[in-house]
Image (cartoon, rainbow, N blue to C red; front, side, top):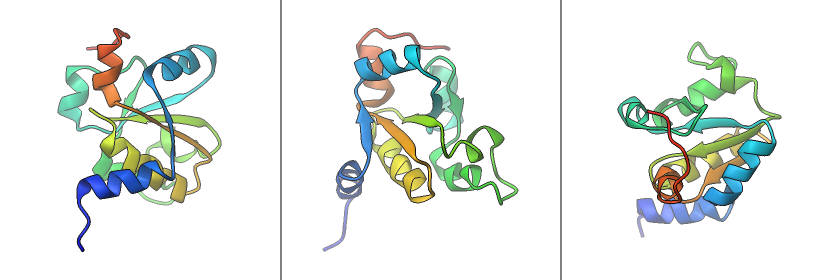
Length: 127
């Protein structure tokens, strides 16, 4: 039977670590965290978590690989840093978190519920 997007996200969530909005907010205040918005640039421009960088899901593997011309210096050398990934609702970023783990990134978290839940909790967004 063919897998659906929901199947892929459920499988990823079994293998990754997630922070809810409250935990993410607390950890962002207490420690150094690289925050990566994996949505498209037009989504990022509308609003994003404070201090986040935008690396769209479709460019993630190239941006994370120091050996490619597509690398993003902020991400490709962050294998030992704490990284928080998020998207609109948490599905794309769950897949992205699994990918980074498979690429050797040690401490990767997905923001459960994405920017939608972050905003619903009343936490700040930059525009």
